[in-house]
Structures are given as structure tokens and as C-alpha cells.
Image (cartoon, rainbow, N blue to C red; front, side):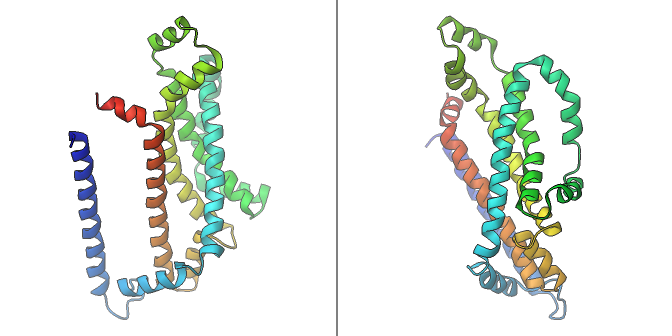
Length: 260
């Protein structure tokens, strides 16, 4: 067993113990609350609401639409962000010209984009997708741009010596070298996408997880509200795990190099 394997297993065990401790603390806290305190339902009540709502009654009506919006917006952000990042990273002139615009646009609070998006696109899926794609593209753009700038000059000169140019150089050298930075930006953007999904569905939607949580709060259905919050947390953990699996598969060469 290598040192890296032992470290990973130790981190996983530490995370598992921490999760058990947190769940136990929440359970003890909620079970100790007064029966008249509707704000903090017991763990059993929330779990019962979670089972009744999400296993699997509202999956088709709320979970699927939410995931569809998030994945489409995230995909657009990845494709557009990587493309723009490569362009800016490859040209210092274009990067200097675009820098003020990029700094201005990425500084706009995400919540401030919802009202104009609703005016332009209505309250349909397009509004959520546009807002998610617009806000999530900036971490990917900046990480991709910095990754292109940091390409080793010796490595790039070697590709020219060996006759690796054009599309072959991009596919075999540039893209693999920049990929770790791209995935770093994707991890940040994925968390932002989940946050924006919930916010947009609370403001302008007739379905989705965010709409369900907001509606439960309006109806004082506190059990259902907390069940929705738990579902969002579980989805965030699952999506980050899946992205991590994809990253390990795509960048297995990079992780192998770290062991040398």
C-alpha cells in the first residue's frame, strides 16, 4: 500500500467519522426540541417527509426538471468558458482588451441578474439556463486562461522541433496540460450552478426543487422544507463526487505523474 493510498483512506475515514458525528449531533439536537417548536422538527419527522416526498413521488415533477436546467446551463458554461479561456490565454492583446469587460461582468451579483433575465426570457427554463451559464462560465474562463498562460515554453518549443503543430499539438499537448486547471474551474462552477438553480427556481418557476422548498416554507410545511434542503445537500455531494470520478479518469496520467 503506497503512502498516497494510505492518505486517501485516512481522509475518507476521517470524513466518514465527521459525517457520523454531525448527523448524531443534529439528531440529538432535534430530538431534544419541544414538541411545540415547529421550526425544528425531529429527525424522524424530517426523514419521514423525505421518504414521502423524494422516494420517489416528486422525482419526475421536481428533481428531473431541476437537474435538466442545471446540466444544460453547466454544459454551456463549460464549452463557452473553455473556448473563451483558450482565446484569451493565447493572445495577450485580446486578454488586455477583454480584461475590463470580464472583470465587470463577473462582478455582477448573480441575484441581480434574475430580474432582467425574467424580463428578457420570461419565467421558463431559458431564464434559469441563461443565468446558470452566464455566472458559471467565469471560473472556467479564468482557470483556462491562466492554464494556457502557464504552459511551459520548453515543452512548446519541443513540440515544434518534433513537428507537432496545429490541431495535433492542441489535442496531444496543450489540452492535456491545461485540463487540471479546467477541472478546477468546473468544480467551482458546479457549486455555483446548484446555488443559482435553487435561487432562480425560488424566484421564477412553477416546479423544481427550489420551488418546492420555497412553497413548503410559504405553507409552513417545515418538515417538507427541511427534507428539500437535505435533498439539495445530497445532490451537491453526489454531483461533486461524480465530477471527481470523471476528473480522476480523464486526468489519471496527471495523478500518476504526481507519484513519481
